[in-house]
Image (cartoon, rainbow, N blue to C red):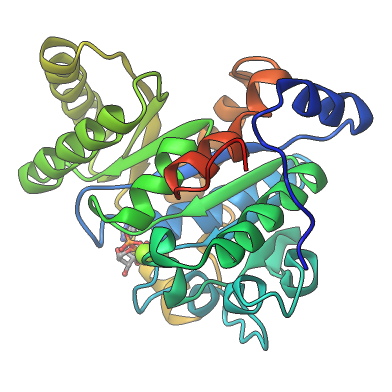
Length: 292
Ligand SMILES: Nc1ncnc2c1ncn2[C@@H]1O[C@H](COP(=O)(O)OP(=O)(O)O)[C@@H](O)[C@H]1O
Ligand SMILES: [Mg+2]
């Protein structure tokens, strides 16, 4: 049986931070629209972070066709379903990816987390807790839009990386997603990545628009993390099942992703103790009573 996790006790969380030097920053990569580059950004950002000697784990919660594993040519035996079912621990299903990163292979069972049995949800939660103690970054590649899966992860994460392209429909959908996440978690931290831009100026124009609307209608501060240029090397990497940052280290998009990683490392958010709140928040969003 799974060990009982007492999430509500701030004392326990503090103890956990004290006992263990490591406590990952949890980043949820989200978007309104599909196909804007979440998976590509998650994987390549993790690789760029690993190049800075950070342990980075990508959790595949995007259950589309072009998933994290496909992008890297991995083919794993086990996935999160085995954790949900209590057959494996999360550390047992971790797969070594390229560039020193690791991957938690996903499962369609994640789509409706709150509908799983209480034991299954505890298994997921325990897995995330273990993961957070072992690594520097957990990058969660979520599904596009406002489905339960994406919102649960985004609302629990320490930071929400919102990916959009300059397309008006992507921007409108990004705004809708931000709004939905904020309704679940008022103090969510949003950071914008504008992907597939022709220039940094184009990214800034998108950011100016979106931050103004977010400020005006939601009263929230949306900060700009950076942009990724539209670059044919990205698609070439996909075709060759090799992340573009490794395959094309000098490509324009690689430089952009490296800049994103540097900025993320430099702009450390709040203290570790606050970060211990991730599983507490996640438990709440997936409907496990925090005093269970
Ligand atoms: N910066 C970019 N330049 C060119 N093509 C890109 C860029 N980012 C993503 N793409 C392409 O867009 C497609 C969708 O990317 P993907 O990461 O699968 O999006 P999502 O996970 O949001 O659905 C992929 O074919 C990818 O190669
Ligand atoms: Mg994807």
